[in-house]
Length: 183
Ligand code: IMP
Ligand code: MG
Image (cartoon, rainbow, N blue to C red; front, side, top):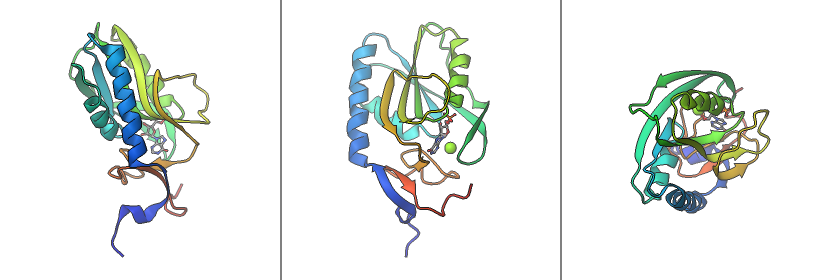
């Protein structure tokens, strides 16, 4: 059998069509809310690559794109809250309208750190646009203004999200077969 990614999948929880239609809705929402404001969309590498690419194409107003890369120490499937900036923004965000584009909000530790960091740079506004929010979100009282889907507390991959740097290129979001993840 060929070494296809789909052979590792247990089930698909969000199909390609569902992703595309929800992301298009979010784009139209951003269009309405940020018309005339020329926002900066900040994608968090690497998980948000697919989402931000589709989202900005669905947002038909002038905007800019920038990226940050962070690493949060921890195991492969759990984050620890200790965040390190691997790549910072190229542009100054002072007095700009900033949209932080994240793949997934799990414990909220990563986003909480990023929010604090970005707020200190005095943007005119700062909102979160998260594709996924895990249902049983532990602790932290973080509510993104824009959310794609609320999902159960399973480890998922695809559409930018990885396990051990694999599966980002799946066009849908799914759960891996038991036995593939070694905790
Ligand atoms: P948090 O700090 O616990 O909110 O985790 C945020 C980061 O952990 C995300 O940006 C993802 O990179 C990663 N992450 C959290 N849950 C998952 C998952 O189910 N699959 C893949 N990556 C995840
Ligand atoms: Mg990851």
